[in-house]
Length: 509
Picture (cartoon, rainbow, N blue to C red):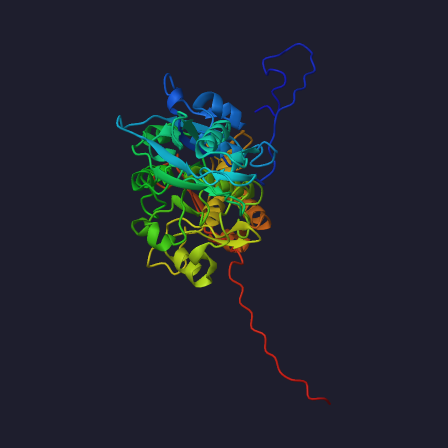
């Protein structure tokens, strides 16, 4: 066989030929590229002619052009990719539009009723969906002494209606002191909670009454998940809060990493699983967020937001922004003690979360935890709902551990595609000059290098253990079957630090 094909072997006349080809001689592999998927309905006025094809977005304004400003995807995007820069940077963010599967779906609504006549000049800030502003546009009114309740209501309507990215639209007819807010989209993803007000200590003789009604109706999330197809979306933002139907669907599609019969996107011939992030604002998730039936699943990740009344999609986006950047660059690390980048805590308390004992109880129930430090919510434990009673240390509980496992699979797949797939299988010791051949011993050598690389990157401990566990063979019953087995030990994270210091007195010499 010729060692070069720069000149055809059929050539006879004198000629000199040279060509350059691409080669890959490194057994080091990159980190698993993260890919964020946002499931989102469009605003009601954008539903007509809505394409359900997923699209990659790099700005919130690009999402607004397709789904509308203030839509769940818009609210998520402004956190993932803020106007000030940073965020998830170059990590692909793909929006999967959905439509309502319930013809009777309703929008979320709220009312603000004003009473009294102002007795002083001041500024009052209103909170919609847990925020008093979106990208510097404030829900704020300038109160002037002598303003009537009707005049104040008009100012509120104008202030809220002028915020471009607001999740609500405003109705105010000018005849009563009532302002009505209606979500721009319908269904469970439209919920924005009860408005609040901060009078900065000066009520100025005014009082405000608030009511709210949550939207109802399901979206066709299943069709959106089906459009994942062969793409590896690693992190999914679920805007539907703790709705059990959506959580069930996420688990059904994603499947389980069962040792005998993995299912869904964990199936051996697929293996492109995801983590789905959801939220519900409560200071007592152990009681209020039911995940006890999900102990065998490692798909859904609860994102805590105590005393933080953001929409569920925004809380999930805060957590995904942290996870995506760490997983992309340093998958050996975790998001412990990282602060939510864009969350507002209304008050100084986070209820039960302040206590370590309670956080420990929450983790053991399959719920993530946060603490409140220096005015920020910081992640203490980020876990899936996985917590089977027969595992002392649940294998698939921590988000970081799953991402670590996926990185090892990704490293293996890249090397397998380069050195094994569609190559000619030859027995050990065979001397061949043909291209694209592989023997068991050659593959072992490549994987030995992979184990060393994974250990250097902090993903596995004890590379020699993995090398010793490795077996590679050509099947004795099928000449086209190449079989590999190995074990690896994940590295851990110093989550719990226990130190004992013994002290005594100094008595002199």
